[in-house]
Image (cartoon, rainbow, N blue to C red; front, side, top):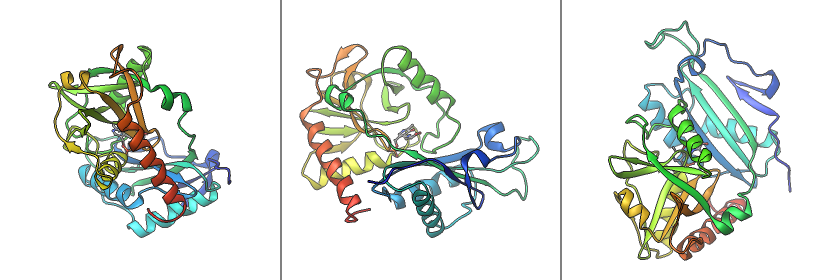
Length: 291
Ligand code: PDD
């Protein structure tokens, strides 16, 4: 099996060793957090759900009124080359576009080239104990802005919320806005109630997760009842199962919420089914049978 590395990055048209890649200090990503990003997992050297990630990138760029500097074919070419240079295998690709560098001014600068940066790092498998025992989460008020469908690099609220969870001995914060569950600080949220899988409906208060969509797709294709709907903090607390989903954590069972066991305190049977389907999908990707 090839060993993924993180030595090479892509910056504005060039592949460079990471320690030789520099961005001007007046880059608006650095000064304002004025940019968007994607995280794309790679399995067996293949980019997972690339078209879906590139479509979401288009939507994020539209959301911040920044022109996409490249076509999907160009992105695919560069991303695949970077993955190869870093040894294939299992990687987590980070792609960021900012509005470029210009003298500090809130207004958009004229005639400035966006900064395009891509790096990748080895993607470690989710630790077995987390899958066997599940993780703890706490609920917190969703203090973020009203455009959470944009994958913005400005993540200060998410960082503060995640750290608050960690400080409380949990792995993730599940966010509540006006008594409605939105998502995790860096993940989407699912519940299972009476064997029905439920996840919040897409909209401006949550990121449309690529992992989320695949879970729903796999559930539907395999006859598991599922629903995109609004649910309250109370329904979350009364769920039989709670899961988190993200590109790097895949589908994680939450077995403790706000210090109370979820269901019987063990990863649930519906999670087991989805986990099996998700892992099979990854194997099909590695075999080149799916994207
Ligand atoms: N974050 N919601 C938020 C706020 C996220 O930051 C993420 C992922 C998700 C899940 O989306 P996806 O399934 O497409 O990864 C939902 C990435 C992994 C990160 O910021 O590192």
